[in-house]
Structure formats: C-alpha cells, structure tokens
Length: 381
Image 1 (cartoon, one colour):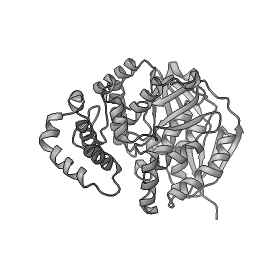
Image 2 (cartoon, helix red, strand yellow):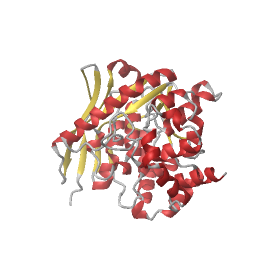
Image 3 (cartoon, helix red, strand yellow):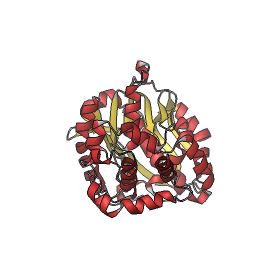
Image 4 (cartoon, helix red, strand yellow):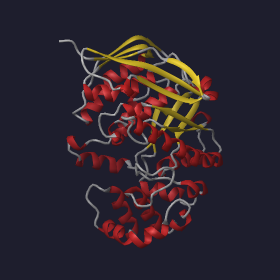
C-alpha cells in the first residue's frame, strides 16, 4: 500500500499591492484530499523588506508550516524546493519525536527533500510584538540590559500565522486577515515609541489546522520565522507566561490526552526548531506572568496599547470580559496600577461586574491555575 504524501512544490515569488509573496503549490499522492483553500501555501511581507529577510529559494517556512498538519493526518512530506540540511536532520531526529512524546496522537512522518543546503545566517535579531504581557516583557528586558550588540533586538514582527484564528473557509480567512491588519495598525504607533522597525508577516498557514490552534502555534510561529531566515540570526520566542518552576509542575499534572497547547513544550522544543544558522531562543521563562506584569506596569508604551484579549470576535481592542483580560486586570489591581491602563481596559466595568468574583476565585484557585496561585501569593504578602 502506497503511503499518502503531501507534495510541496518549488517556491515561487511574486509582488502585488506592495506585498512580496512567496508561495508553493500543494498536491497529494496515494490518498488524502485538500480543500480549495489548501492547494497553495503562501507567506508575504511589505516588498521593501524582501531583499533583507527573504531567501526565495528556501522552502523551510513551508516545511515548518505544514509539519504538524502532516504529522496529525499521516502524510509523508515531499519537498521539491531547497531546505536546510541541518533542519531536516533536527526535525527527523529530535523535533518530531519530542512533539510525538508530548502529544501522542501526533506521529513522526517521513520528509523527503529534492535538495538540502547549508543556508548562511543573517545579522538581525527579532521578536514578535503582539502588545501582550509576554512580548512587552521580552522587549523591555532585552533593551534595558547591557547585552552584546549581536544579542540586541533590531526588529519587531507581527505574524498572521494562526495567531488570530482558523482559516478553513473564505469567511474565516477574511475575518482573520481583517483582525490582523487592524491590530497591526493599532500597535504600530507603540512600536514607533519603542524605536524599532515593525514588520507585518501575512500567510495562510492557519488554513492547515486539523486541531485547535494552540496545538500547533509553536510550529506556525516557526514557519513565519523561517520566512525571514535570510536576515535573522536569532529570534526571541516569548514564553507562554509560565516560569520554569511552574512549567515543570504543570507538565506533570497533564495527562497525555490533555496536552493540547504546544506552547507549554516550548522551553524544550524551541532549541529543536532552529537549525544553527537561525536560532530560535525561548525568552522570559525565568519570570512568572505576575512578575512580568510588574516589570511593565510603569512602562508608558504598555499603558497606551497593552493587548491581552483572546476573544476571537474582538478586533484591535481588549474586550475586558474574557479570562485573559480579567486575569490581567486582577494582577494590575493587586499592583495598584490598574487605573494607569484605562486606555486599554474598561476598568469601571471590571470593578462593578467581575472584581469580587475574580478575587474570590483567586483565594481558592484550581490546582493547575498557576497564574491565580501567583496572584494569591502576592496578595497575601
């Protein structure tokens, strides 16, 4: 019986509406079907950054963007473009076995490459800026410390690669892209205050999401990072908000079938997403979410544009109702800093409707809610 294979064509570059677009056609062999939206995978950025960041001969970004999809659905991958020799070895021998051990329903697959090469490293250091606690913490921590020049951040990025919702239908794709654009435009003035170039990277990677988005967000992030591989030497991957101590405890509490959020594996996984020429470095795992919130509570750019909302319907503003909005407002209230964030939260709504309830839950948190446990510990001190 022939194994079913997902064939990824040679990368093709094009320019339209001031966007540089790299794409590859997709087809299956030996079984399996693709929807109309899955006949092509693509990534794009403003054309003025293409020469600096994009190697049009590299298919690494497509390999990373399709890896979880292939592993989950049992496709072998046949790459007709060039991929990094070191990346191929690492994915086969370290990354896929690690992902499978963390999430047993996902199994390693065969990757066949028409050509493997050793790509040269870039010279820039990047990180994502989503205006959340973790990304603000990464930026402020990096820029405020006396680091070697080669370790200092040079560029900020904003990805549309499964961060904003599913893309399985044309309507979903349009909603996600609208959300991506509105948020980027909303955060851009703050990036200007920080003083670093801020670059949007668009894609349709979220059209290849067989599970909940959190199951593959790490690999989707990596796909956008590899799209930028010509210019980057390293990328700082902001943590999911857990300190190392919390991470060890939380992993032990989760049964294998509950291990959905791939970001929880990033402290170990990230080192196996790079290929030597491009390093992907987990950042911020030494601090709890509350400690990060305390770090940036007096930081004016955060007060102007902090965005933590995880509501799928909310566009560029915080809804002030979802669990992440309320958890952040609770911490800011404990720090006596919430009123400084009136521009980004409905503080009066929170105090009238949710504060008493959230305080009560904080005093008796569930055993696996380390965010509330830290808040309770701080409140008692």
